[in-house]
Amino acid sequence: MKRKLLVILAAAMLCSMCGCVSKAPAGSSGDDDTSLVVRENSNGGLEFEFDTENSFEEVGGKLISRTEEKTPEIPENGISIEEAGKIVDSCSFTRFYLPSEIKNYKKYYYDTIKFNGGDFYQMYFYVEKNGIKMFAGTKYLVACDGSKVYSADWTGSLREEKTDPASKDPDTAELYKDAKISPEEALFVLNKAEPSSLKLKESLFAYIFETDAKLYEKKSILCYRITPKLEYENGVVMSEPIYVTADGTDRIIMSDGNDYRQVL
Image (cartoon, rainbow, N blue to C red):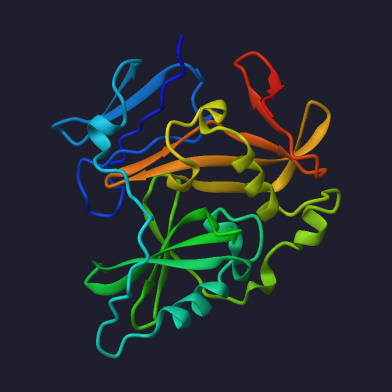
């Protein structure tokens, strides 16, 4: 059976927005080949059904694009984008699905929006090499007055974050002590493969990549696990995890349904 996207309707997702949908991370359902659709019924309850035909785009809305460099819209008395970046630097990287300190990532301004009655900058993390941007972690909001920070969890729902010192974060030198390349370098290994070979339908630039803050062993090799996701207006779709070898040999390993095999 052809692998389909797993779609879940989150009733409370994106706060008060109704009819929103999202996809659970790979491996969260019992059957990797079946789409589990969760819908809200007229009584406010949830109905579950398996679906192998419908695509996420039919219910998820427009795909979010981050191809344009926008001039920030800064409200009167609002802080600068640079100041917003420094505020989020103080948060824990583990809350943003990043594998290392937030200060290691550049900040991409997407829009100024209204949220919970206030003005917020909608932003993303990315790393850049030779002019190529790779978006990482998750979407986040910083209040234009600098008072609050929110991150999007895997469903797309927004949650408030503490701006405690990042010194409470895990020691990345210890997390990746057996790795020859950093998790950020592992992201760029993906550019050596065709998206289709990674079971991706869009260009790599369209995705945001979550990298686990730990190493996994696949085919007797330590690897970074990277999960690509597409963000739509009303939800998030997460694709199959991709394993990049941490030994600097730039190999990519993925599941073929029965076992893991090297695709690059």
